[in-house]
Length: 441
Image 1: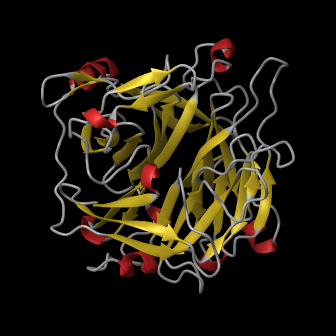
Image 2 (image 1 turned 90 degrees about the horizontal axis):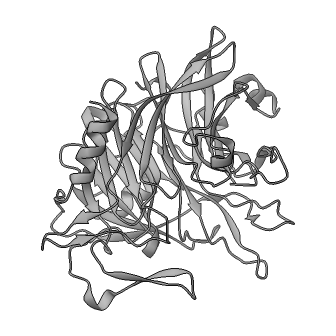
């Protein structure tokens, strides 16, 4: 199916799928076991703002696995499972006086990419500042020796993902969210565009021992909707902006993309033959359909909640953000989405109709504070040593405490998956054997 056909289909969408729910959905609380050092989004802190994590599983000693987290203009940090920082990678400097510097937004992993004749694990990053995809090879021998494990292997001369020129790059309608997956020997990333409703599917390729990419497919999600009462509605946004996507994850076995359009809801999009199939809106944010106006003095849009027509969902509060997939056996497992507006995470079944199963929040605990305004999250099912013997969930915390005066502090929280699963009245699945994240296609 061509991009133009998909664009026409998406623009025509007005009817959305209802999300079946359990009879008594609940919101439970869990606590984190480990947190990373707080980073600060100011000059003294290197303009570091934690955003999105990924987990690299060590092939020989899982307890030595890594958590890789983006820091926007601050670059990239690599952590051990105890939260200690093992490596810092700076974002690229601005190429000119009036140009934007690099800004690392989202990160995901590709295992076993054939690079220069060798199977290589990659951390793949969306550089929002320069509108590129950047790739970092992960060296297991360096991990074992205690050396910095990530090395930049981005091909020279990679072109912008969305912008037609460097001038357009500086307008910053650039690469934003990112999710990666394998299909046999081929590797792909899905990238969303900042302040637009566009998704682009890229195939990674070896360019003389470095990683480049080429576009395979493009999809425009709807920017306006026809409500059940026949009225037209477009999501709340600043002037000139369209409803963007950031949080995304791919079901590695089924090749289904789950994409959170922040002011709209959670989309389910099959990926078939290196192409986007017809999207389905499987859940809506609570604010869906609510009228709004733009306050020019405050420079923000204001929801008219008194006239909410009641067409929104029950499980996500805008913004819908970080998305991750827990893979179990025989198609079982879960899709997790950050409900940023109420500091919870919604849990949907991975199989069949993606039924909503409940929500959880990460509360203050004895060793860490809770999680607020979470942008990104990732989950792995396999044992990761004694600290996380039955899987790990990593989430971004947009309000790390205790605060340091007026400085904006953020970090990442590490949570045992079995703690999340066991918190529900009907416990979620804990399956450490049916899926290997290192061997998924």
